[in-house]
Amino acid sequence: MNQLRTQVGIVGGGPAGMMLAHLLHRAGIESIVVEARSRDYVQERVRAGVLEQGTCDLMHAAGVGARLEREGITHQGIELRFGGQRHRIDLSGLTGGKTITIYPQREVVKDLIDARIAVGGAIFFEAEEVSIRGFDGDAPTIQFRDSGGVQEIRCDFIAGCDGFHGVCRPSIPAGALTIFERTYPFAWLGILAEVAPSSDELIYCHHERGFALHSMRSPSLTRLYLQCDPNDSVAAWSDERIWEELHTRFAVAGGWKLNEGPIVQKGVTPMRSFVAEPMRYGHVFIAGDAAHIVPPTGAKGLNLALADVRVLAAALAKYYAGGSRDLLDSYSQTCLKRVWKVQRFSWWMTSLLHRFPADNPFDRRRQVAELDYITSSRAAAQSLAENYVGLPMEGPQRFP
Ligand code: FAD
Ligand code: DHB
Image (tube, rainbow, N blue to C red; front, side, top):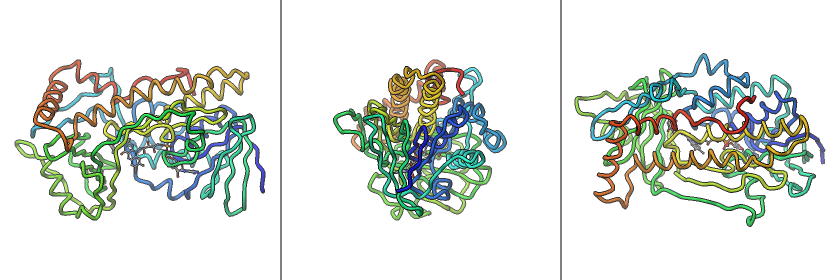
C-alpha cells in the first residue's frame, strides 16, 4: 500500500471540494483531493448555471474570477410569468445594486481544477473503492485504489465533499445524524438547445400544465426546463413534444417568440429537500450536496455548497494559524443557519410555481394570489429578490 500524508484529505472534486482545496492552498494549508470520476467527466457534467452575487465575490476574492469576469453574463432581474402575463422582478433595484451571473457550474469546476494544477496541488481522478476510516479518533485516513495500486492518505481532517451519493455521509454512524427530508411529486426535464436565448433574463413560468423555466448558457445556447412526472424517462419526451409543451406553457397574451433549435442534451432531475445534521462527526466535516440537497427552483445548490466550504476553509485556517478549534466546533451550526434559510426559500419557490398533482382549485387560486402579491408589492418582491441574489455569507466577513 502506498502511503501519503497531508493536512486535509478532501473526498470529491466537484465545486465544493475544488473550492476548498483552493482556499486552503491560499491559506498555506496542504490538501489532497480524491475524485471518483475522470477530469473530463467532472468538467463536462451539465448542472447548475446561476451564481449569486456572493459566489461571484468569492471567486474574485480567491483569485479565480478572471474568466468569470470575461464570460459570465450579468443579470439585473428575472421574469415571473403567470396567467399569460409577464412581470419583471428588478433584482438590482430591490437589493441595492446586487446582481446574479450566468456562468455554468462546469466552468466553475474547470477554473478551480486549472488553478489546482497550476500550483502543483495533488488531485487523484478515477479513484475506486474510496473509503474513510479513523475519523472518530485523531488518525483519519482515506483509502482508494487507482492505476498506481492501493493508496492511503493520512490526514488531520477529512472533508466530505462527495455529493449526495458519496461515501462520507453514509460512513458516519447512523445514530449520529438526524435526517430531514421531503420529496416532491414531480421532476424537471432539462434540455440544452443550440439556439439564441429568447429572452435577456431568466423566466420562471407558472402554468396550469406545470412549471417551465427559460435560462441560458451563452448567446447561442439556451437551457430550458419543464416540470414532468418523476417517473418519466427522457425517451417519453420527443423533441416535438418538448417544443410543443414549452410553447404552450410560455405563451403570453400579445405574443412572445420562443426560439427553437437542435436539442443537444436531455435529462430528468428528481426534486428533493434533504438535510443531515450535524455537518460534522469527529474529524470528518461534510459540505455541499453531501450534507444537503435543495430542489433547484431557487438556483441554490451550487451556491450553498460554496458557502459551506468558505466557512470550513476559514475555520481550518484559524486552527492551523494558532491551534484554536472554535470555528471548527461551530462549523456545523454556522452552516446550518444558511442551509435552513436556503431550504425555506427553495421549498417556497418550488411550492409557488409548480402544479401539485393532488392540489385543488383553492390551492391554485392561492398560488396565483401569491404571484399577484409578489408582482404588485415592493415588500414581497424585495423578499424574493434578497434571497435570490443570495443572503449575506456566514462566518468571518474578511475571508479569504
Ligand atoms: P457534486 O457536484 O455532486 O460533487 C461531488 C463530487 O464527488 C463529484 O465530482 C463526484 O464524482 C465525487 N464523488 C462522488 N462519490 C465519490 C466517492 N465515493 N469518492 C470520491 N469522489 C466521489 N443546482 C442548481 O442550482 N441548478 C441546477 O439546475 C441544478 N441541476 C442539477 C442537476 C443534477 C443532475 C444534479 C445531480 C444536481 C443539480 N444541481 C443544480 C445541484 C448542484 O449541481 C449541486 O448542488 C452542486 O453540484 C453541489 O456541489 P458539490 O461539490 O457539493 O457536489
Ligand atoms: C438554472 C437552473 C436553475 O435551477 C434555476 O433556478 C435557474 C437556472 C440553469 O440551469 O440555468
